[in-house]
Image (cartoon, rainbow, N blue to C red):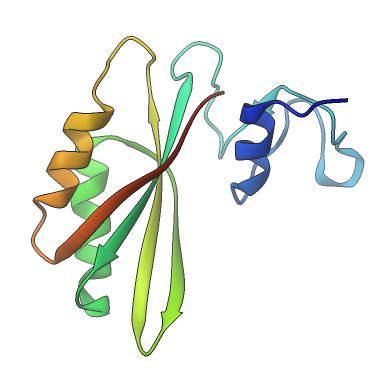
Length: 125
C-alpha cells in the first residue's frame, strides 16, 4: 500500500502519533495524525520543515523565540552536525490559504545570528 506524503512527514516529527491511537497501538497505515496537541482538521493544514543554520549555537534560544513570534511552531529539534555546529529544525504550521511560507522564510533569514535557512519539506496534514 503506498504511503502518503503527509504520513511520511508526520512519522519524521517527534511526538506525532495517529489520531485516536496511542504509541503502543498505533497503526502505521493511519493517515490521520495529530501533531503536538494541535488539532489539524480546523486550524492548520500545512506543515513546513525549515532547516535553520545558526552561526553561534549559544544564540539558538533567541532564534527560537523570534521564530515563535513569526509563525505557529509545532516543534523544534536541534541537530549536531559536527565540529560544534548545530542545525535548528523548525516545524511550522500554516493554513493552506495563507501563502505565507516564503514570507516567513525571508523573515527567519533576517533574524540576527541566522546564517542560512532552507525549506526542507512542505506537506498537507
